[in-house]
Image (cartoon, rainbow, N blue to C red):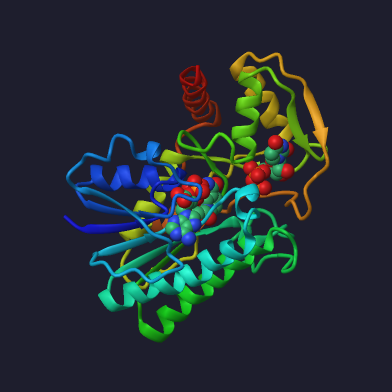
Length: 314
Ligand code: NAD
Ligand code: UDP
């Protein structure tokens, strides 16, 4: 049994990861400042003897004793990371320095949840880990994109300079239960709009593409990455390569919910990537990992989660 630190553990992905680590028989220390995370996401874990929840902001040093660190703390949806952009960069950069310092003192492995946003609005497609990206360093998404890029730099400098056992994964769009209803991300927006028969807000003409991975698949990939031997640093792309346009996503959600919603078109936000699809060759060979949950199945589970949330509101 290991004692494992998960930063950002009360957020969407973090809460699923905490659950997985407990199921694998480990002790979990979840650290979160509750900026976008919620205790409700952990409701079934709070009274477990192997689970501990600590309110803490990782931009401040943390002194704990653990055997492994998963660094997930950082708001991930554009409206949340743009709400306080300076804090977003601090979380990625100062937070990474604090967590790397902790890993160095304890001589333990540390995994960084990086993102497909390091590729920016990509000019090669699908995106391979060797692509250096196309990021606007002064735009509204830069606090997140450049913060995450700098965090990757720090991880690799700690690896080269201090021989730290690092793991870097680049997560592509992921969805599922425990996403926040007000996070403004496309899956939550479309599902809630469809369930309430409200207009579905397509940004731009809806021809931009994304590739969505169901959360259970992603968590399995993160876990496998942590089990790789020292020296397997990544970065490794994790995501589902099935790509579709936002118009296709809207139509699929209308179909699955039986909604009467109509489509309305809003301006495309600045620097919104036109296309995104992971090349997962590395994840397949290094981790023997490939997503298994289809879009229909994953959306079905997510729709049922939000249906339940709407019922509970009344
Ligand atoms: P989320 O917003 O649900 O979770 C982030 C968590 O971090 C929240 O619980 C939040 O309260 C916490 N947090 C934020 N700043 C903090 C700080 N300074 N100190 C302590 N805790 C802090 O987002 P998510 O979707 O679960 O994303 C988790 C990680 O995965 C993030 O690092 C994100 O960049 C990365 N990621 C997610 C996706 C995705 O599609 N969900 C895609 C790419 C990368
Ligand atoms: N989007 C949309 N309608 C919405 C919310 C988002 O058309 O109500 C689009 C957005 O412009 C982007 C895509 O959906 O092209 C994915 O957006 P999201 O914020 O979920 O993630 P990201 O842009 O970070 O991939």
